[in-house]
Length: 342
Image (cartoon, rainbow, N blue to C red; front, side):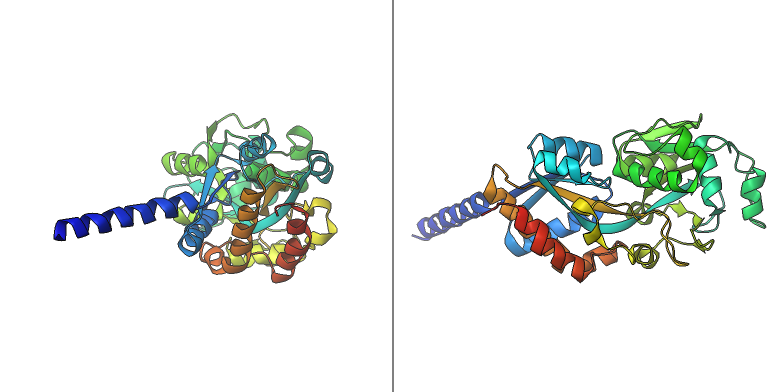
């Protein structure tokens, strides 16, 4: 009798587990590696609260746009905002989900995080291949008293279509006329520096910079923190040298009125303000107005409603900046209402 009862209970428990898993939502998304650290935390908390899964592929902004355009995911994520006319032509909507910073990171023996100072002009010249050695007089002039080796600089860049690259090159195009003319900006560019190594995703750039002595690359700040990387102090538009963190990212974004831009599409690089981090950016979520699977689209909206409202502390813990309450309210009333997910 005892065996029969235990067997019956086991069958009931198994049935309950199968039923629960079968009813759980599977929300799919792909794109930006910039947002991945915080999105993974949001997804973990959302599953704990609702039982619903968020399956996100950190494949770069270019890959995310390809997947949402192919309608293989419920949402795409990109740090290179889609232009309003393209959104309209494709029947899509877009909203910023998080604000963070792109930070130049280096691997120089004996140099600590924040110890190396770089100006906008010097940073552009390093990635142009004009400055090729760490003991270049222009770097030394910014860093009196800092022990800097006489070694060749290896530049580490992204190999994939990258929104982080779009933010970084948008900044360089604003601060350097030579960069704008020679290279330009976008998710992919032809890097002029001769000593260059590339990596896929923020993960790949982080790994390469940590591996290669005397290298410099650019990653989203959460990756720099997670991997204990040496970031630089960067001169901003007001001429002040600042360090990256959620406060300097917030200072850069404070003057942005997202409602003024069609499709909410704008870059916030090289913002004014003495405390502003100069390479600040946002990740944008792209969805269809009339999705083929309205149930899944509604579940995706529910997830981002949770993330934007209840995920603020998770974002701050990773040194991202959550979207302001007024912006969240605007997104909910306008962008979310445009999605036919009933």
